[in-house]
Image 1 (tube, chains in turn purple, brown):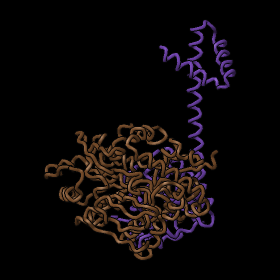
Image 2: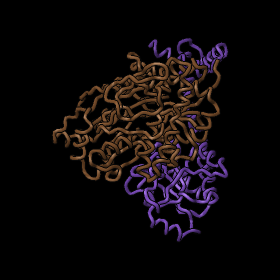
Image 3: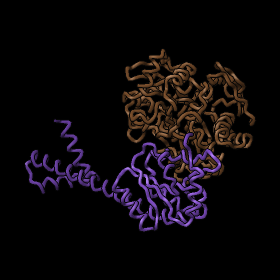
Image 4: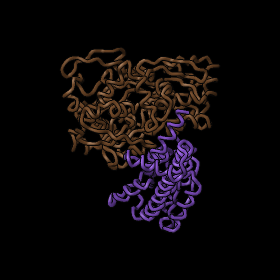
Length: 211
Length: 391
């Protein structure tokens, strides 16, 4: 592996700023999400934060910035690029590893559940990383909720549209008004133990097939 | 009666087939287990899902559990390979621009001669040669390093190796970030299909029988649940046997193409499963016997010598003690668990658990545990033979 890991230069930099702010890299292609993560981290403490939004040359760019902690979405396939950093090729290099707190395994577990993975420079004190993890976990949980809500809203809208189309078809085919068309759909659904949206979808599909 | 539901992590690749088939074709149900397949976005994520107990078993690159045993990468959770899932199945491809230079230089893209292909690549590529592999601990990386180093280009020292997820390999080639790659199917074929790459060599032209993916579990789980472990190994073994039947590839390609698995057109997946690959955007075809092997020649037997070979390659690169690495690595491939699991079946098992890797040039009958079985050719392209120290 070429240009690998952290150099002795980095070691000095760390020694020189033992009490200084930890540096964090957030790998996140979505600009808005990245801003939200950065805001949460800023609330959690004094950190030096960089955002990388492009997966191109990810490992190299991270090495150049010499961070203490890297945060990345578990769903990102680019995460595998960080594995290169786990292999230090020289004795003065400090490999990074997936964050696992031996005293508090629940924290890593919570992170995985929330959908964030943290890579931490070898030798970092767990208590220095904890506030970062807590902030990231809270933020990623919120992303998950937003994603679920968005999916639910989309589904509800699609169902609404389907029911409207089915109602329209029934009104035309049977000469009934809107309320009666809906009552018909609802009764069929109840008789068959299905949801109104399912009956509507079946009707629309069948009508499409029959032309 | 379903005794238990086991969740199993996988990456969208053709060689996840034994797990998908075990579930879809009822081999799991035959063993009274249900398999819940969980698709993962990356190798590090499937490894962590396994390490943290979010899945019981996983489709895994064969060097990952070995690397974990050597303290490289991962979370420190000991992992075991209880079966090999597939042998071979990788392809090496180059950018169209590099392919054109190689053709001008007289290379014929015969797709079967590792020495000629490697020499042409080394001659015509710019320096340093930029290579994409899906993961630092992968057979893809090992094959490239072995091949190029044997041909006089010391790797990884003299090349620029970059980790690129399989599904992004074609994009990286198109964007000019890499000159060549080694990747599992269908991602090499996808690069051809998208018109951005030309395939140069199948992985088995470098090593004719390399352990590619394994069925990995947490070591403590394997010891705590021998009965469930046995059921899973047998279900996957029967799935592999089914995959090796002549009529299976077409149906397997349909199953794999479903949206919850690979979500890609079956005709692309069919190429790897039948060994008939389209190697260039011009539509040239090459047939590769044994391109990916799920069953024949004891393909799924976890040879301790295979693990030791991987362990020593990793040790050489990272400066670890060779004897310790060989011992730790060999203990990761659990031929003992595999044997116990398959004892109730009619599977013929090898008499030994380690072999001289690379010693066979042709199919050879060897003593089995109860009769005879045939091992296929397993030679390295340069004729070297690896003598294991552990057995």
